[in-house]
Picture 1 (tube, one colour):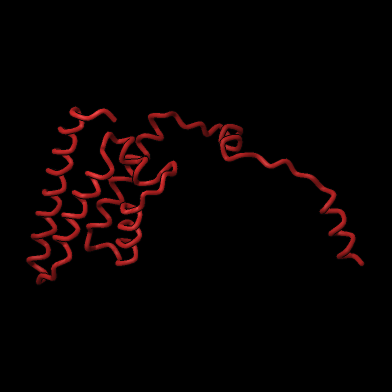
Picture 2 (tube, helix red, strand yellow; picture 1 turned 60 degrees about the horizontal axis):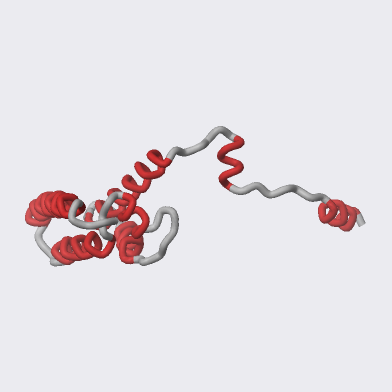
Length: 139
């Protein structure tokens, strides 16, 4: 009987739902466009680095790889983050694939460490190349 009364009372209760934006604004957490852009850039860089970093777990590397290969469009998807950072998602993904394939060949530990350093240098060069090309395209 007591349980039934509780259910009856709770079904009569109405709580207004607020959107995440309302909650953030009500609590004084309003993000500027620049802050969202910086966060997207950080998410993108973190995912690219973690997917190529042999020190990360296989699960983490796979999750980042899958995120990079996804064509989903959401506020923090690969496609949106790449475009926000002035990159063409397809070109960035192709550059990533080339580096990822280099990393998949087995190598002894000292060679692997040297390869990781070369891979980071290759990645920095590729990002620089894509940044230089950015001016040639309308995004």
